[in-house]
Length: 94
Figure 1 (cartoon, rainbow, N blue to C red):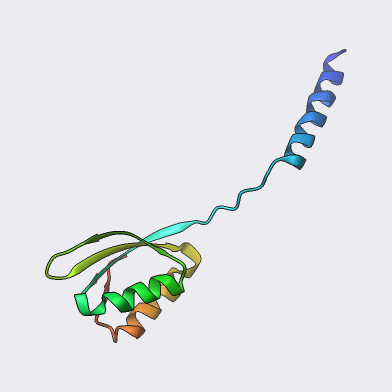
Figure 2: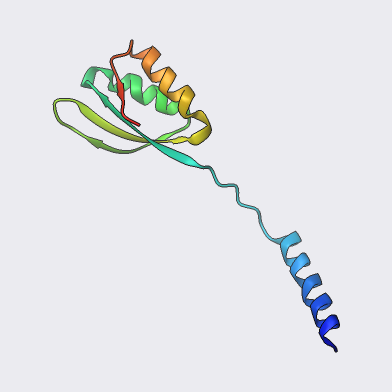
């Protein structure tokens, strides 16, 4: 088989592999850092759940520092929701 035949053969094989390969959807997440009082933690957790995010870490001090992973397309909505539901008490540090 010549070079042209090999190229066509391998090209067809590659096309078939791609047709039958499983597709995985990936979600682009953005970290959002929040500072809030302990009283506002349930509100923050509700907002994280509503935006289908997840809490990555929490640090306790005078204020809670919560790092969340939110779908990058929902970050604006998440920030507005947190500010609205907390009456502006939760600080968003992005």
